[in-house]
Length: 257
Image (cartoon, rainbow, N blue to C red; front, side, top):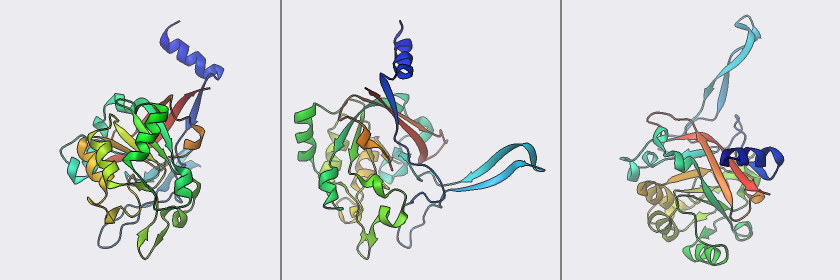
């Protein structure tokens, strides 16, 4: 039996489960809100072209209106000024889009502190128990924040001091960018950076440092609680937008059961 035949049989037979990590995409999908004077993306919207009527009697279809960074989406280097000479979303290496992943679960700490920041020591403690981060793979960071993903206000959790959502420290972002063997970093929040990232040095360190290092981000993931810490194969399917800084994506995980 070939390797691909074995994989196919394992999936159809249930030995490998496909877990959908993607948030549904609709007009109610939470989107990032930047303060003035910065420009913001638009909410997702469908515009009907025809629906079994005089405009098209036997077919239904829509135009879609959305931003590249809406819902579950992929960030690529050109999204940030530090990576402006890097690749766009149509040029992402295929080995980045199909790659091993690990899941670091810090939901218990984030539950008591929405401003919780993952540290390098947290990752080192995790690797001491579970083994190294995957070379060329993904680090998926579970905080439990996906429980708020259907509510824009709760998801952004903002007050006069800004948004309060978990993320990583600046030192941790630098370590992930410069020392960790990963190709990308995935989160359940609206962006890869913490809500209070504008106050860190550098500002928005995940964007500044990881994208500047040619790495990638995944945001608004769901169902990370269904995954084991290790032994995950991640499949990321963005639109190959020429010149694009990112794209909404369907993100699936293959897990041996």
